[in-house]
Length: 87
Image 1 (cartoon, rainbow, N blue to C red):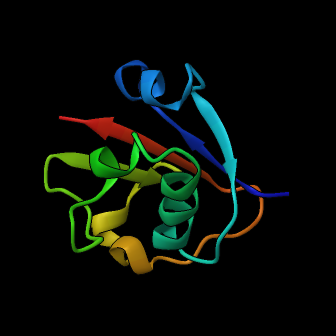
Image 2: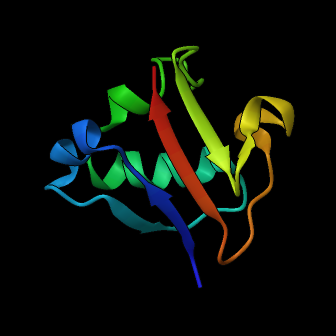
């Protein structure tokens, strides 16, 4: 079972209207990279040109702010949920 990435409505428009995307990876960064590769229009809204998260976009991994559990290096497991909340 993959990780589920949940997008806010404003970003879902860049993913063909899809709010929940199944993605693969072993870290939050891998999951974001997987989604960014499949939805190139969404990519610059998820991370900066260096591949780091923007300070004004918050990612929650199973209700935990990733800034406090390892950032994009935080490990993910099958069935985890990653939610994006723009400021």
